[in-house]
Image 1 (cartoon, rainbow, N blue to C red):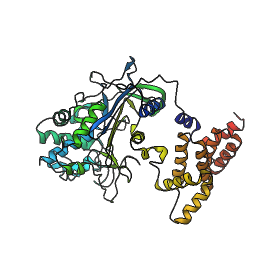
Image 2: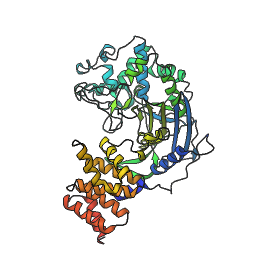
Image 3: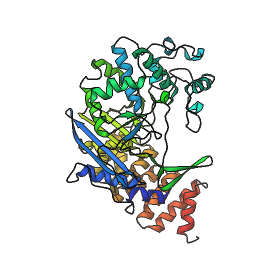
Length: 496
């Protein structure tokens, strides 16, 4: 890992503009402090949060700047794009039609849409909802909708493309299926799908500020879109400050993305959903939140966190505190913890802020065991190691591992997971503990160039440059192509 990037990840960037006090809050609480620091670290201009417990909103705050160009502060009425969280609304819309007996999720889409390619005709609504259809994507390589915003052209272009895989074979995020779902909702409801969602969800849930739209529309109190990346040729480069982002979603595409909302409205939507105002049957919600099972019996999703995908809803399928977690545009997240009376909405106006990566930490302020510092999110083997090290001391890491293996011969430590925990401890400013873990990783995996490189980094951070140099040299010996180790060896050797 690059030392410069590591230092940036650990230290707050205090030179960024001061973040405003939370709207509607006289005194900042620990969540406010955490979120302000996260905003400084990630350069997030504005952020909204709403927390739901016991059927009511218990926290509803806004921070930062909604419009950087004019220095306009964000308020609780600032409106944010939720991007692909829109798909969760589509999941609800389909299940509403299911409850009315107008459709079954096991039906093929060809039952409702004519003139589909032969290879599409057996694909079911469930498969398009869960991104397991294998359909070709209606987005091009530059993430632009085919046909330049014209629905007929877009469908003509995507229909001639080959399917990517047999339905149910794997998870592959795909927008085409949601365009088809929009057509089906419009046909079966007797109104355009946007109006159906507005009437049956926005109005019912009391979402007064929520609407469909994009960057082209003039929207009162819109928080806009910002990005830290800029395209130069065929590559994207990262800037040091946010720049203006632009998102356009043609009307026919707005089942895939297109809803703009506030954290308050989104929280009210969650409350309406959980109290039976949107779906009458409990089984409807259970079906909607059950991740698709692939042909091989496994589930598939975006990453290790959102590792499954249900009917428009990404799922966080895990033993401890499972959740459904719609995410949108790398800027917004909504986590409903299935075994806990807790739902959290975080909206930002920075693409790439990825609040899904820190929403669990916010949950930790309500459920303390979910704090990263308490070991939440660590692999099971690392959790077992952590528990023993807390009892016996991090300085005895080697002895502790030997004891765990003796007690349970099946106990195994993964090098990358151990390395990841080391950086986790480092981000918590637990330097001594992190150093012990990086040393343990070298002891357990003496043939790993990465283990030596990581140990070199923390030794350099703790100003033990002699030992750091030795570890960088060992890393370079094991992996001569390791540019980071080569650079550090050159610099620490005084050969600038």
